[in-house]
Amino acid sequence: MGSAIGRREFLRLMGAGTLAASGSLLGLATAQEGDGEQMGDSLHIWVTNDGVRVNPETARYFEDRPDIQPDYPTGAYQQHNLIWDGSRVTLHAARNEFVSFQVVVSSLEPASDVRVAFDHLLGPSGAKLDGRSVALFRAWYVKVKRPSYGYAKSSLGAGWYPDALVPVAPGEPVVFGLPGAENGIPGQRNQTVWVDLYVPHGTPSGDYRGLITVSWPGGRREVPVELAVWGFALPDEIHCRGDIYNNSLAGMRPELEMRYYQLARQHRFQPGVVYYRPKLRTDGAQVRIDWSDYDGRLRRCLDGSAFTGGQGYWGPGAGLPVDHLILPFDCERGSNRGRAWPAPQPEGGPTREFEQVWVETARQFREHFDADPHWRRVGKIVFLDGLDESYNQAAYDKMVYYCKLLREGMGEHWFLNRIDGGYSREAMGQLSPYVDLWVCHTVDFDAEKVRYFRERGTEAWFYGPMIYEEQANAGCGSNTFLDLDLFTCRGVGWAAWKHRCGYCEWEFDWNADAAWHEAENYKADGDRVSYNGSGLLIYRGEAIGRSEPIPSIRLKAHRRGFQDYEYFWLLREAGREAEADALVDSVIHAEPFGASSVGNRRIWRNDPEEWERIRLRAGSLLSGGGAPVAN
Image (cartoon, rainbow, N blue to C red):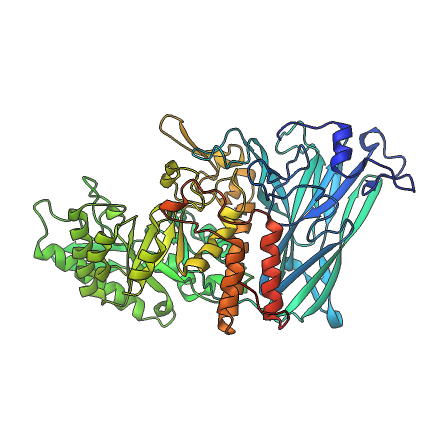
């Protein structure tokens, strides 16, 4: 899959093995005479959906691997697929939704100054989608050299994967050559251009039309795009509860950090940043907190002003504050006492003075947040990372002890007390009265056990991989591996709906500078454990001279799944919850988590067009069309 291809194979893949009656190559955009030796042949332009990655050397999907999954997409998808009939693109969207597709430009010979432009769509009564609603990105390729650890059977293999999506300014074309100068892929015959379309609130429903223009020295082709806008909107609120853990944003410049929060909001996820801490001084049991730096950093996220046009934001959730904030409380872990806040436990054991510091600090936190009506709307979570994944009675006793102190200061229902780990039923039996939020490892996730404790007041989120090829995958905390298919990203929202729970993932900014050139961004155990793209959904733009964070295709796949969740939520609000469940179950046909899932790699349908048909079905139901969905 990773090697370059010859002329005959290129023509076969492009559907150009025979000549049309006119003598031109079937399906090819043919360059005009006089192009010179560099473009003596032609460029081929085709379009595909947002659920695959196209190999820049072979023009095949990386997901075109029926040897791995028999229902992976295969065949002549360059000529025809769900959104592409060989000449035009057909899409559907709700208001307040992003829809995406990929334009693939292929060339048998080297090409330069290829330009892909697309700046507007026109709709009913002169309505127009343009500016930031039509966004183009050039795909950046990262080389995978070996499968991610523990995924020998599921990995899509070695090769140059398109992942980072480098944006161009609204209205500007994407300009490139083949091979591209940026990635240095000697056998590159294809370049992917990603297109995001955003349908703002207030957009009239109906059909919108526009043209993608692909031009090169001496040649040009126009590709029609048709977008049907449904008469309903996705909500601004994020109903798929959860967050993605992060430990780097708090150390960034505040303005750059805000850009990450804005990008996260546009992609419908919440950063779970640990730990923002105000300056604190103690004198015995007396506590004094200086809120100036803390408030200065967080105010815009807590009152929603970070997500307004005045701060450069556009997209869903405009003006709304973040969903929740992780408070800075923590305890020591083993001998590491420096992590404890507001104070470490004395060596000889807890004292009344120590307890008063914790209670008083908690009290001042509540008083401070309750003083602002906007801040009161933000959920508050306490996560004692010092007790993370701790499985012994002494740890359980500490979890209960610290919860009691914090509830004394802040009240029982003012915050959510969170624990992370694959705790047994027996452990949860004693912990659940003191645990509001249980983030459970997916390998230990038992649906019946989760439902049992949910009924007793403990909310559950799942944490860890979607697919367990083997038990070794239990050490992974994310669904971000570059060489796995994109369902592990899109499926997060679907699995959350299926289990009526939230989600948590580990990191979206891990080793993001080096990742531009090295897919293996996480290594351990003497290089034996190696992951491609682990904990990385957003690239740091500074590494390529850009000031903004750069999204990945995997981030877009997460967004697609979170938007799908909102479809299911809207169906439930319309009294059609059973139909939403049937839609999800028709795709995720096995339990994705728990001990029984280990080794089962066929828990859902593996053709992205099947997932997309379900979204279209949900959209039709919400628009008032279609018969009930059968189980």
